[in-house]
Length: 131
View 1 (tube, rainbow, N blue to C red):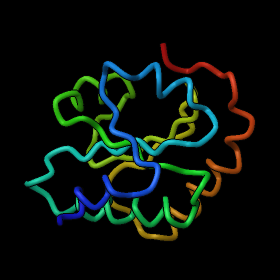
View 2 (cartoon, rainbow, N blue to C red; view 1 turned 90 degrees about the horizontal axis):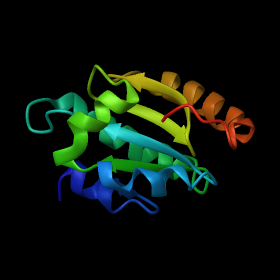
View 3 (cartoon, one colour; view 1 turned 60 degrees about the vertical axis):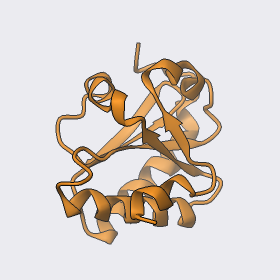
């Protein structure tokens, strides 16, 4: 099993497609980290971010889940969420975008930024940032 397949087995992980965004937006009880992997078979960086995401979900169980892009819809969803660089994680709660982390960073960067976003997520209920 590769890291992308393992990420699909992460508790609470969702597969996100362009057709089911409304269901994602109505689930604002938990922050979702949308994973834009890009060219999965061309760069080790996407695999590294997949491992980091799995660990972030484990560390923040019940507060954070993985949102895995349907490969066929990733390009369309990148445009919708303003993603220009992959791999990227975009953190959303309901319709509110809390922030993004592009490319591979050090663990301390992920821990600090994700902690900030999760702590600030309580105030996002009902804020619409996507149309």
